Length: 457
Image (cartoon, rainbow, N blue to C red; front, side, top):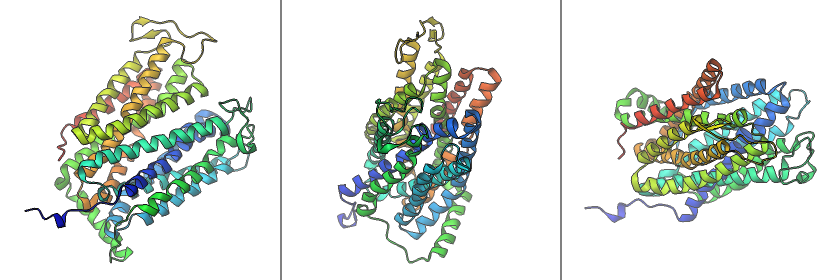
């Protein structure tokens, strides 16, 4: 008979809410620095031309990704043996803070601004990704297995909201058009920031650092950590690496996890490239500028938040695998829909009037359809990522969850260059942006085919 005394206990609700706030705390690094504010500023204002800026930013991203890919499984394995996760989160969170804050000094015309920005960005990326690995590894101790999907979805949704709020504040009050000196709301930048010197764009770095420091505190104060083992750190390191080597060498014992990680690697490559090229595609095909892309990013984040909340509940009802498979099917259909659009055409063959000067935002029918498809992509991207995280928790042995989240980070990074590279090759070979986007359909289809063979417990 089952002994109630042996039932596993879980921390109170406030600890779960505090854990969820980690995603809120960390997301502005990805929203402000990596995607919408600092990265475009770097390419447009710090380097001789946007193409060179994009290349340099890509190399920094690749170097950080390689570091994460190599080290995260090993560090996760060490943390599984050593016990507590918070010291690791604190150490790598410090890298996020230092790297983000240093971006302030990457000013146009200042000597060494470009290498400073690249090094600071790489350091911040490594910190953010590693801190996330160890934060994820705390999940099994917070809620019962049947609520893992909801927990993961709530975390992703809270991250989307944090990114949305930080982006809205930056566009409304900090980052200004250097030509007009005004923010998106038509205001002068707060704190006397100089629009001509792009101080509002650079301030996204210190804002990210401060945001993380303030909002990660509930996690440190309220979430119980794994008890410290009696194993010295050096011995834990040896044991962790040996355990990881044993897991890799005997992958057949974890065949479902290995298959899932391969599928995750493939479809995450496609998702990374889809988001990376979504704005570029809109700019090239429809001529969207900063305002259109910025508003598009905010709307996409809103639908992502809704999707992550709803997807978490759906995950607990029907299982993470079904949620991921459904999301991949929707992404494939959306990519076909985007491919069917052109300034004067929808659904490949139907003619549509292009927008004329003065018609306003998203005036033409193809633009409206592109906007709608983008919002649907945002709606399913949150559930895709949240359900992937919860599916791994359900597949992995609890005493090795940190190690497997290290491998999870590895599978999401080790080939992250492949999607963008193949899009670039296809685009250059055909001279068409549509051909580049068509490559992503293959990533989502292949990822779904591999995942189809995973049996979820």
